[in-house]
Amino acid sequence: MTKSFYLTTPIYYVNDAPHIGHAYTTVAGDVLTRWHRQKGESVWFLTGTDEHGQKVMRTAEENKTAPQAWVDRLVQDAWKPNWANLNIANDDFIRTTETRHTQRVQAFLQSLKDSGHIYAGKYEGPYCIGCEEFKLPGDLIDIDGQKCCPIHSKPIELVNENNWFFKLSAFTDQLLDHYRTNPDACQPESARNEVVSFLEGGVSDLSISRSTFDWGIPVPWDTDQVVYVWFDALLNYATAVGLTDAPESAGGKKFASTWPADVHLVGKDILRFHAVIWPAMLMAAGIDVPKKVFAHGWLLVGGEKMSKSKLTGIAPKDITDHFGVDAFRYYFLRAIPFGTDGSFSWEDMSARYTSELANDFGNLASRSAAMIEKYCAGVLPAASHDADLEAALKTAVDKADVAICALDFQGGILAIMDFCKKVNGYVTEKEPWILAKDPANQAVLEGVLYNTAESLRALAVLLHPVMPATCEILWQSLGAQGSLGDLSAQKISDVATWGQLPAGSLVTKSPVLFPRLETSA
Ligand code: MSP
Image (cartoon, rainbow, N blue to C red; front, side, top):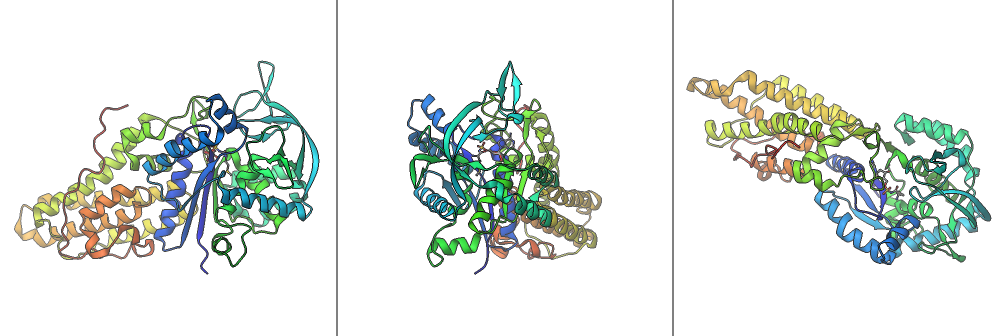
């Protein structure tokens, strides 16, 4: 059985509608999985929603709605349409209120109890409902004399409950050993260093149930308690692919073909849950840990993490309505090194849209099609070669593949856009519009136009994971569908092979790929 490349995003809280911070993670996951699909790999891409816990329950209460009705409505009206608008090609969408999840969480928890990893205890200490996290007194900041969460700047609550505990501390050495021997298991390096020093400081056991509210999965042997929302949520990555199902069942087979996950993509705010608690839960159950947890940086507003609770969240649609979906998908991954914080600005996005997308890429495509229409009656001339262009393409593909597979989206996109610049330089240097003035140059002119179209063929394939709809339009305009088949079926490993567009292909002018922006925002 082939193991799929399995990538997950965090499952997002449905206390509110998505903002561009959530979209940043999911678009990155979509680009990476589309790239792997174009490498010819079998891929499984999971996203979903985290629906239990006090944060969601309280928002539902504030809106005088039952929690289940609240989450149903948000998932249906806000989250799923948002991912559809952003052209996210996830293979599955898990909701933690689904039976497939709740039953498997209970089965997993029971097995940890049976194997002695869970015990009864008392929790007393601060809790941040925004983070849904038990805090240490040293984690808190003082605002107006009140102890507050440093991320949410809101007062913490004091919890004092008899709960069930997971023996997290027992896995400290095993976790340290894991990250020391597998540096790739937590990336970027700054994230791994943070996790290692956190572990070196020692970890306590974790309360994994709550008894003061009931919006959660009942603890199977003590139904007065519900499972702690993070313990419930982290398990989604495995319950969605059949964790705890018998090996011969459909779920068991799915699990065997996906687990361990290749990449858990997360924001740095939730690194410790993923790099400490989650692998320890799996170690306790004797299940392989994920191959990589990658923590990217934050989108900032005024130097702070963009968030709905601080009223700084921008809805993705506010941006896509102005710039289009593909420019949105491109911009954040191109502008911000993945792993570093970055600020969003309309000015920077407008500038890059115009120079990189409309001028460098869009104009190249429209000029090339216009010239083939004008000088060759829209029929692609015979194949030609240019050693420099071919070499530049090969370099671009190699660099982009290495970078994107290492989640260096900026490096990958830059390598591709450098090739695009190179092609623009080629056209400027060869001046086909001058060549066209003398019929004696027809053969040279046709060679230049072929090379340009062939370069665009490669660009359509390479940029397809980032800007699927735009590249599809370009693919149609090059007349490539009939001869080469679906754009999504083109392989990264073949893209640098020159001369794939057959002579005689019908090239047509497409609608403008990146229209002039209405007004500069
Ligand atoms: N429900 C938990 C995750 C459980 S995963 C088992 C959660 N949800 S969340 O809705 O708060 O989403 C957090 C994630 O959204 C971050 O880790 C990050 O991926 C993304 N982002 C939310 N705000 C962000 C920014 N301002 N900037 C970048 N990413 C952000 O935590």
